[in-house]
Length: 336
Image (cartoon, rainbow, N blue to C red; front, side):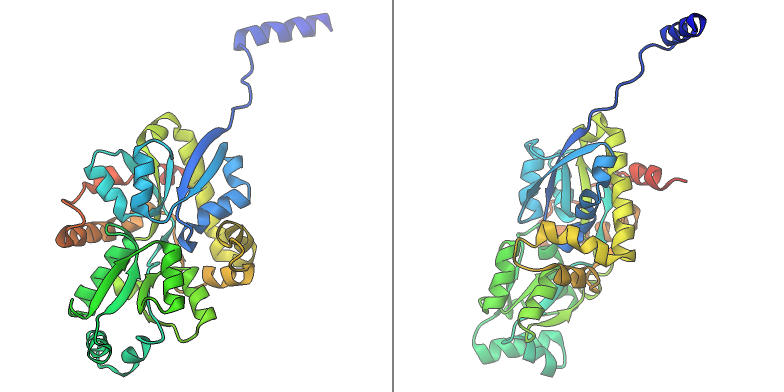
């Protein structure tokens, strides 16, 4: 026995002390409360973020541009929101990298009870807006998020490039996500660019609110919510970033294969007592909820969105895509 203990002691001396269990990595996540962010909520709810060695804390924001300020000031490490504000951030020298997508073609356009009938009778969407102004004596007021955001960019692209509406016939009104939903329900806005779960909620509460344009119609392959990491955090914690992306891959698979299991995690983050699990499950299965993880799938559409933002003046110049996307954590996460 003494010989055995001596051998163990010698071996331990040669190998050095056994490594202690790694401390969890604190990660401050900024997120927009929409279905497109569902993968991160599912990853948290299933315990996969903790399993990846992360200790997450969440802060909710009303729009991507607002979150960029927090990212620049160092108060969040991970950004879960639309792609568009990130391009603006990089042109201002903020090192942020998209490591995963979460959803595409999220933004849709709905018309309220006063505006919707015009689309049913007009020969085109541009004519619907024109007829509304002729009858009501004013432009249709359309709610969306601030300039530079994906909702704002998508709405403008649909109005002016796809529907070919006259700018005298439609007024774009920026406001927060919750305010947009309430304004449409209250009739204070005639229409809005919204996404899930707002789409399901407003139509359940008032069936006279109609879906007029899908995400694919508004902006083909529309890049939606993404997960981006602040450069300093990514450089310091590469394993944590890879673990985050791996958890998102698992969460995306669950959202597609078992919405009923995923829904309670999403409802816990988004419900706020306003809605229930059944509504969230319906929103997860909506045509406006297309979940993906591979960031490479949205590169071409992101270039197209940047080009359009330059044309409308919300982006000074196109940012190099090569610096904006980092697919390495995803590639490692899905490697066999």
